[in-house]
Image 1 (cartoon, helix red, strand yellow):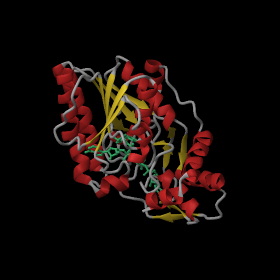
Image 2 (cartoon, helix red, strand yellow):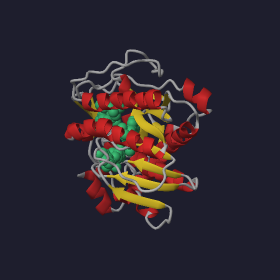
Image 3 (cartoon, rainbow, N blue to C red):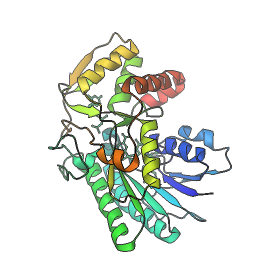
Image 4 (spheres, helix red, strand yellow):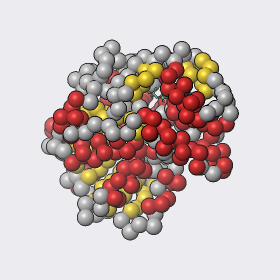
Length: 319
Ligand code: NAD
Ligand code: UDP
């Protein structure tokens, strides 16, 4: 039985990865310090013989007994609201955290896959973004703590690959959504759906002309699974290229939820990227991957999830 360590395993993406690797017959060890995650995301796995949970900060030395075949490094605050609140921890988990994971991987002779991000492209001047684009990041702007941590993480991972011959994979994840996002994590989808559910106006930042392209979580997990098992060590974009303006996205959420509230405009945050859309040519050719779930389908599933939460959960996740 293959053994896999998933850091950030109690988070949105990490918990879906735990589910997938359990389903594939792996022994899954989730590690998380719960700074932005939630045990509720993985509590259904606690009863399983082949699932373990370690409450641990991966920026500190990591000890895992026994063998490991794979390490997925997903621990990191991911939403702007989170990483602006905890900037130092964000920088630490992207630097000390990945150093610990790579060191552990050498000892265990494990393959490492790291969660990088479209944010390595910053506010891109090339559109759509191919992996060859080096990016346009402001290192000392508010988003720099996240973007530069992720860029360092890629550099460190590539150095371990080049100098130590470690098997490594790098996924550049574009905006992903789905069940288990936190209603209060500040990202646009939970923000809009939460506002619609509470009968509040939807807070669009700026004039809403900035674009994003949203990928449903199941599609992302499939792409990550294929990348891990591939032999490709260079970065691969995984995302859904179906681009939309934030204004149009807000209008879709208004239609989906049937809310009688409207879109209101608030100031655009500093360095908010104006446009973003993945070039997925590499994922298609190397992994034979492309997204299967349309935004209409994915949004419906995600809305049903938020509607199914108990009032206690809704309250807990809104504050
Ligand atoms: P999330 O906040 O739901 O999950 C992150 C998890 O990491 C949380 O459970 C948190 O408690 C844990 N964590 C943070 N710091 C830690 C530390 N020092 N030690 C142990 N655990 C720690 O966010 P997510 O959306 O699931 O993102 C997961 C990963 O994917 C992140 O690395 C993020 O940068 C990356 N990513 C996500 C997206 C997206 O659209 N969701 C896009 C690009 C990249
Ligand atoms: N956004 C918005 N209203 C909100 C939250 C976000 O208009 O309540 C905008 C934000 O300014 C950005 C886009 O939606 O242009 C996506 O933001 P998110 O935080 O989800 O992801 P990221 O900016 O990291 O892509």
